[in-house]
Length: 388
Length: 155
Ligand SMILES: Cc1cc2nc3c(=O)[nH]c(=O)nc-3n(C[C@H](O)[C@H](O)[C@H](O)COP(=O)(O)O)c2cc1C
Ligand code: SF4
Ligand code: FES
Image (tube, rainbow over all chains, first blue to last red; front, side, top):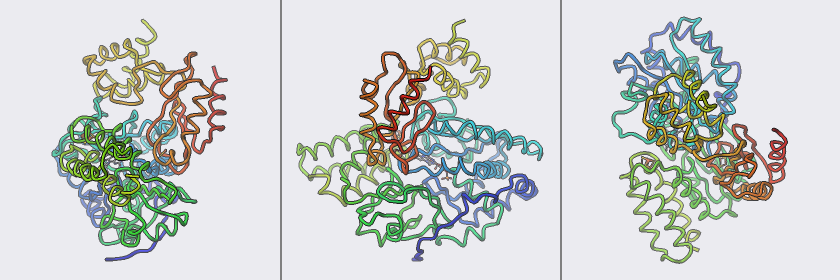
């Protein structure tokens, strides 16, 4: 296995690296298939959590035959511990717009939408002003593509792509069955390329420089760099762009407060890694993938409280559409409370783990399916803290 | 025409008469009236030509589309883990003391509603709260009270 040490990178937030006019007028001369090949060659995988290869997603959407297709930028960013997309949209929105326009050109879409979580409405005024300029530029370049913003209204589940489409269609944000996948039937049941904010910025960079520079970063399975949202017990909480493939131990050395007991990688729906596993845990698609949330806990923290918070979060944010998740989240929460109060024997935790595993296979979408990640990793590694 | 009817019609004109406009229209009503009254939902249903049950069904799904009256200023304090660790409880207690309401309630003068919210996307700068659309990261109990006092002085 390749081992990387921590390396700070400056691609996403670098200013003056994106002249939309120059970049787009050049790109609009290129053959869309060549652009797709570049993105595939770069090895870029989606930065929203699921890690699907971006080039393939664009290719599949391009291959669909349809009068209407859409580009959507997923800016719903609701995963606890994640706050990088807000910063990207605040600092370098043009890079996101360019990524959307390139995607629109490649797949053959005329409309693009940014689905911005309602909690970020304070960004609307400046984003809309910049979009006006950008849309005017599209017109000037005679490129028939228009971007607008749709707001969310405080529902974590609407970050899940099919729930997001439902929401844009004026419905409850309830995830759909898959397949069909968005590349075939997304917004308005038309072919849709939906990408995370950060993913789109990397496509802009790859469009500008070609795939080589991006490919040189990271590992075989995790090409490139990634923006991390670092919070919790750290003296230097904030947003950092780091090369993928680093061991968690190096991360903790750089960001911990010297007393780190555990790191929650990937937000509430991610995995909790205890100290003894720091050395062997790689941050990347070959190890623990992450949408970028790294939350650090020191030894003063009760992991019972951490798990309790996560389960409350899922109980509230479950859309309630399918039973394994709706009832499962509630029962896991009630279950650990009962164990804590001594109303249930400690081995009841084994039953609860089985329930979490059942949710992994029986729940309809990623929310319910991933509750087992935090649940099992915290219960397995901090069993005493849950019981006593 | 009532104020609400006028508002709904203007919003439907702006966003278009289709089901896809439902969210922006409802959001527009909440922005002006702080919540969706029965009158507003019925009017939206009529204007978009969909059933009132569909409108209520959608509205009731979303935390920010309130269907009960809210104050002019809705305060939402993040209660998720990072803000929990950073001391959201003392912030909530201080606001609750100051406004003499519990979480979920609205002051008698109709000015403030105090709510909690899940992660607001400022975990490195907790505790954090929203007042309507405005965000206030890195607050303390005292700062939060000062901010709300500032709003209290507005009309
Ligand atoms: C419960 C849930 C919440 C999600 N929230 C987000 C989100 O806030 N932002 C995001 O980009 N992707 C989110 N996703 C992933 C999206 O469904 C989708 O995979 C992603 O937007 C694709 O973009 P990417 O390939 O660029 O990562 C979420 C998935 C699930 C299951
Ligand atoms: S897993 Fe949960 S969030 Fe997903 S569809 Fe089922 S109830 Fe809804
Ligand atoms: S946990 Fe409060 S902003 Fe994320």
